[in-house]
Amino acid sequence: MKNRYSEEQIIRAIKQHEAGVKVDDICREMGISSRTFYTWCSKYAGLEVNEAKRLRELESENSKLKRLFADKLLEVEAIQSAVDGHHLHGSLLIERIEKNFCAHPI
Image 1 (tube, rainbow, N blue to C red):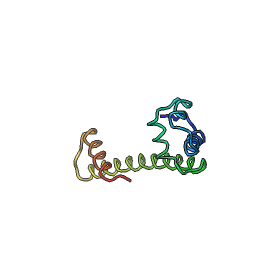
Image 2 (tube, rainbow, N blue to C red):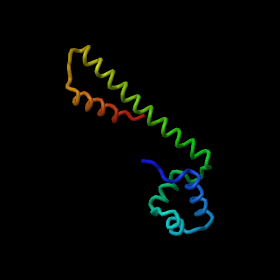
Image 3 (cartoon, rainbow, N blue to C red):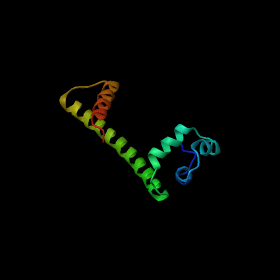
Image 4 (cartoon, one colour):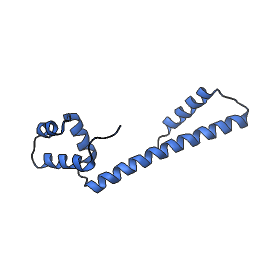
């Protein structure tokens, strides 16, 4: 999902709250719920804009690495299955990989 607010806008809103502006006023001005605001606070509080951008970049890179890891696990399982002489149906193989992947998060 594309975030409609930049890191600068989010951090500015959090700093407004820290300066004494009420959450309801900030939420009304930005057109967001208080839940969204507090989610932002839990993620971005204490960060400067450059740190928030770096966090987003690292999260994106982490996501790509997880997908790459899952793809490699799938390849290894397929090769191991072929070597062992077991020919698993595609969906069963994918289910097995997902189970293994979820059991060992990065």
